[in-house]
Image (tube, rainbow, N blue to C red; front, side, top):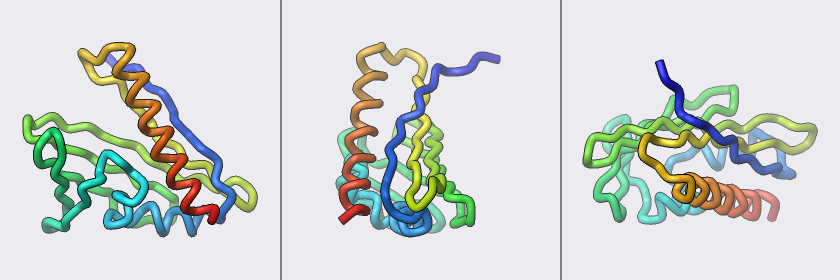
Length: 132
């Protein structure tokens, strides 16, 4: 079985992890900081729908939990499913926000680097909002 190359993109936020989790873990708040979902998310049963350059996407989140896990699966119209691991980890009075970026088959080095930079920008937006 093959594995995909992975990169952990993270940022430190100087705010209690529970506050960050409570805000970032709400799907309706994600478009405020996750620019890939800038069009907004609409509830659709247990999932959420977004509309963007790739068409309609379906986002399925893990249930709220006490561990800071905001994992979600994104399914685009082509049927491609991408698993996204997003974690809020306590760190003293603040927290670490970590996103595991998987390099999809066929993705170039440039595309992988651009995705990582995009995620870093989104995490910086979350940090800015949470440290105000």
